[in-house]
Image: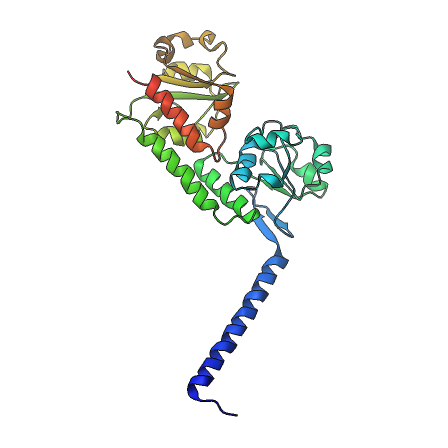
Length: 301
């Protein structure tokens, strides 16, 4: 049987369309069969049969990122420090990164556990057969990468669009400050024990974008433990510190002579503000605004 030329071409196009449709169906089925694969910060490929619906998060920044991606409802348990957004405060708590409650985590039957690479519980949970995705962002690039990986894990296609909005918020905070010489030297104390924000940390990176100099040198790493004498020698113009750490600061050896203390150029952040500032994730733009306000209020000579 023969067809006119135009009819034959149309028939071929229809057949081709049918083949393409069949191929797409097979491709989608293969993707579904393959499940979800994500390489964590250890270099371990975590394979799941589907995007997980039951998740335990043991790091506040990961908890916040899951929720920013619109998937808070998948969380069935969190660590004791995860307190944002408000909805996660109602979830069962399963210890902390250094002391996870293994029994409580197992009882929640998670399909995957999100936790820091430095957590002591990673191997124990994996030995019990649980899937663990270990990620520990320290820089802005880390936070962006983690958001992308969690976007793939949770099958959220617009994760990078969300990140771009966060980054734009940091830029807006920087632009809100008047132009000034890059001479303001700042010390940011992250936690008790003298742990500081180095230039390679996301906090240090935000400081640089805000146009100030970090007294902590790059060779010391992202969050080094600083000897009090180091700060005395550096003599910062401005100190940023949380209310949890500030008690007794002026009694540290030699600190009463530091310019920032002499001139009362110290920003003391509340506990809630400190939570925003020390978590590399969705609230980094808010962190930048807090630091910008500090610089505007206390940084002027």
